[in-house]
Image 1 (cartoon, rainbow, N blue to C red):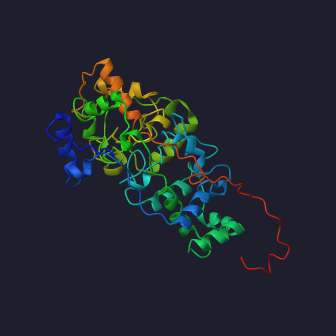
Image 2: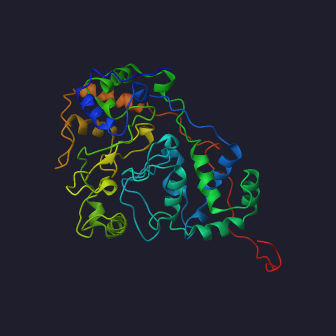
Image 3: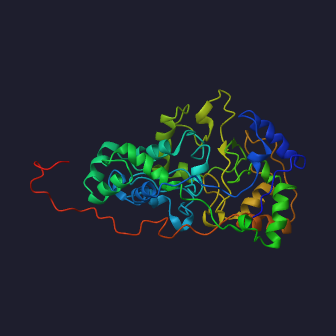
Length: 372
């Protein structure tokens, strides 16, 4: 197993970005060590319950979609689309992120707006109207009608099914989604990937933001990724964004024609946070194209070329973004390294609920006389 550590004196860009990260607390070399990802301890009964819930469409308002509709196992729990699906009657305005290793993240969503825990992430995802649009009181009553759930909640130690326990069980299942057997972690990288790692930590300076086991510092930057025009040209997507922006307090949101990103967290009056998005994990990239928060870059080669050119154009672009001067061969090596960060697909029965989940039950004739 190979573990590489950040070389603090070798990357000018990295040293500059370190100054920014210090604002959130001391960053040590240990914090920036790359891989492997170590997941938390798992309670098997709770994780099994969470797995069934994750694949159950009854957790959405109209029982049309489940968590797995957008977070598909064969795509590293993303969906392969530039912009996500959404609750029927609306469309999403951001790329679906992978859930692999999300159990070890410091904050969630592309703008980093939730920095508490996966319990809160689960609650937002289930109840948000453009996501799963579920009233959790209704969800609770639905799952209480399923005898399998009654047994599984009891076995998990939760007692009677409740919405609070759902918000605990799904995160327990997410705790199981941890990268495994990536060539980087097993020490089986190709020569090209090994050269790419040297560039990643040296000349290219990627490690400045992409560090730690998941290869992200969980902080937001503006790298001037081009906006996705479909958000504004498709009324279904624009409607979703406008509702989101209204709730998040985005100024003049009906006339805004860009995704403001992490601006929603601090709302600085000078708009200096507009266009900042969280550094994404680089784990499982082989399965999660297209890339960036809005799916605007199709391939890993294109991503590397984007950064080799110094990013895009934006009034708020981080001034430390500069052309990298990588040759074509060096860019290919960097892509090989990025691909080596992907492990085995998490598609086996330990990760996927494969049994049918029945949704039709015979009527209980004496339902007034039996306990709920």
